[in-house]
Length: 306
Image (cartoon, rainbow, N blue to C red; front, side, top):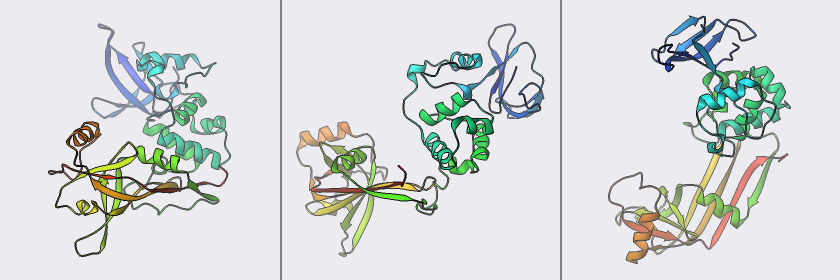
């Protein structure tokens, strides 16, 4: 039996064959991963020293290889069956943590094999983490952060509760304009944007709203007596952005065009049926406003070598 930090130790019940107890391995006493282990039990959250017996086995959940990888260790295949989910059910595309790990690894000129060796994890799992949405254990993140000379908070997107834009700028940033098609695509992936309107006193106001994109129009719900209702029958600006302080990159899209109240009952019913969410502000907000952009522009900041 050879374990890694973050692996799960499962003690089976001899009588039923079912799992009697399980916990996360949070401490190793031998460099080769052999027992004993410090285990944090899931039922009590206590950490105890464990010498596994014949009724114990490991779930190497963080060493599962990505689909298409060959030549994996036998323990990798045990993970797939232990996890109980078919590989085809795993969504494609990297997750946020995986993207940050990959960027930091490339920034430091490290290969996957070098990084995996430093972090004491399987290269196959590191490939899986960088290429698929994954939820690594705290122990795995600690080892990765140490291997990459960064922090767990940074890999998780540290500073998400802080005002954006306080991260360090890229050494060689690249600022490029987005095409209208790219802007439409980015608009359709978000659900909260900012609309600029004139308040009752004539001063400009910027208000966040939940929105949908329907037939190339930006639509949102509001109340007739609200600030955002003043957008109706005027030309407005609508902005959406995304900022990643941990990676010092981001994008923004600005749509400008006339805003109209949707009055056709059939159209209102269709918008309500297609809405993905209700307004976060709550209350009665049954007035639909539609913005048909006549100008759609955007910009994106990425590393200069991309």
